[in-house]
Amino acid sequence: MERLNIDIFNEIDSTNDEAKRINLNKDFHIIIAEKQYKGRGRLGKKWSSPDLGNIYMTVCTEKDFSYMPLSLVIGVICKKGIEKFINNNDIELKWPNDILYNNKKVGGVLVEKEVIKESTRTIIGIGINLNIKKEESWWGDLSKYKLETKRNKLINLIISEIIKLDRHYDWIDAWRNGCAHLNKEVEIYKDEEFIKKVIFKDIDEDGNGILQNKNGHERISSGQISIKGIY
Ligand code: BTN
Image (cartoon, rainbow, N blue to C red):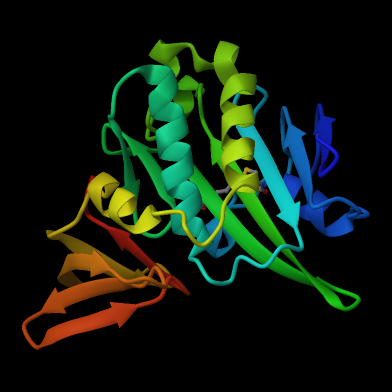
């Protein structure tokens, strides 16, 4: 455990924001909170983060992971971790960074980079809703599994998989197998504006989506793009 620091907060603005402020002097610095009051999601969205036993955590490191699409890889790690505790394989993935249960979102990954002095931090934010408020019922609901009681074990598993990640991690087939919309029609949105309907054919080694339309194939990077229409 010499390589790790872990900070646990009752309440914080955002564990990803804390990762930008900390003094990083171990290989990995983990920040975990019970509640966030400025939780952030992808594309500038808010990430609702009430104090209900959910996972709000960030893994911060200067290790170089630029050889793999971390959002997708971390999605695979979270899927496998949750499935271990719910005893089935019902967790699915939606490109690029969503974790689904029964076709509804239960978690997401927000990977950011921050250059501080001469070094680059990779900031891996993970939110998993083990429990939800009833008024947020558009979210997927894992509450019947009572995972709050196993939260620390799940966090532990996710951390241990991340710190041993290397080039040999075989994520791509695991991601394909877990994807909820491979070979299905999806709607492409850019900045919340509907662009077109296409077939989501595959992903490549860089985590780009490969889409098929009448004119052939095209690749999309996650940038400002999101897909809808699968639930
Ligand atoms: C998404 O699906 O849009 C990504 C959601 C990521 C949420 C997590 S919760 C822990 C970390 N801190 C944040 O403010 N966001 C990430």
